[in-house]
Image (cartoon, rainbow, N blue to C red; front, side):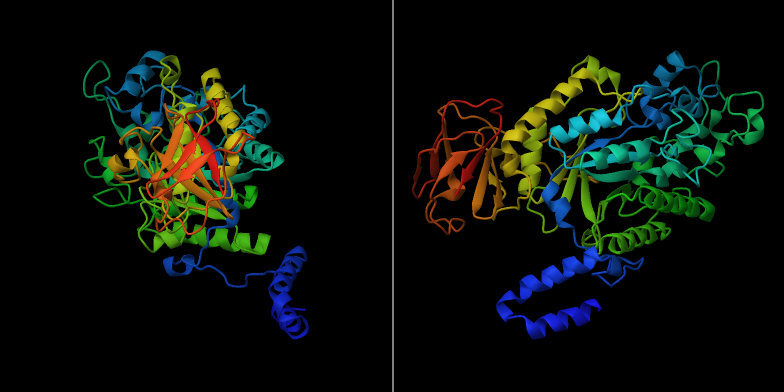
Length: 550
């Protein structure tokens, strides 16, 4: 019996008061039998993709962890290493010259050959991240360096099963995530290799190697007698093309990120290869999420590859799950595009409750592992992460936290302590985070008055006033309102002015207040000035505590 016929039958034979429950039950039965509950298909247009609805599992999960890990971590010298090692005079260039030699002789391809990842234990790391409270996990599938971290059919020579670790890294992450009951995602960044790696076409302007071109233009024939004999570096670097306008301006890449402002236009073959690689990735690992480091979707607006990938993923999810359960992340989205996927804000937060679910992504340190951050103890603290999480969730968002992974595949002991502390806080206070929805206002307090505006992809974190005990963020679940207080007040009293008697936000009587992790009921007064709550003795990890208001 088809779904429509079944529903008609139910409507005719079941009392009206029970009809809704029975329809839901019928849908669940059909899902169990493999029937397609959603018959509409997504097409590769913005209008069609705008039928996307953020799945509840993502809205409920709230917190994920990301392993932004690939061969650029081997040097342990920070983000964008594969680009900036070719920028004469840069921090990475100087380090590379000292550690590895001149980039004309030892280029990024040679870094890949050095990378072994011999301490990688995805099962141990995912168990740690689950204990930290992460409900989903993101693995890097490729970066702008164009090296695939999986058994890639279309980047068949330059991938982690053939070179470097000689392991299927995405496959290992995926298996460990599923084992720990976590939703699994992949981040895809390779659409920008064409322009991002243009620095590899340069040469020193001064010194003993002045005029000697770096290795970015090497071809297969030049590899005879080397470790890479038989490989074509152009399959990795993709630099057999003219430079973009103003390519020697190191900051120009940011102005050309949306494939405008004089950027060199990628070939059809390049775009087709990117499309095929990404579809292969989706088919091989069935990710619940795909993160694109692009303005809107990859290669948009010069090519429709990103639109076709999005439609493919959504349709595959409907076929696989009976409903659309996949999530795509994109950046710098217009009003229509925000209906098509989840808006991702890099290293920043929205300053309002967003009408559609969104995500903030940030990192404990540098996106690619930087040993100097470890040595100088400059990681984000667990306190900062928790404050960010509370702020983001109160505004209808999720937080994706990158924990930098060393070249060898491990995390260092400072990171581990931070992750464990996040888990300790979440174990007590998770009820105020998971499965919640925004309240009528997201919060109150002085930090709201100095919130920094977003810039490009985001980049407003840490630019406003620091959170204090006067800052509160709200979440709701059923009849419960949670007030997350971002610091312990010196007088052991919390005043929440948004909950004053007679305010538009307070429609019902407040019958009780308690603190998550504590058994006792808290005394309070409620008048036209505020809801004032007397606190018990100071709690552990008191930089943020959660009041449950019924």
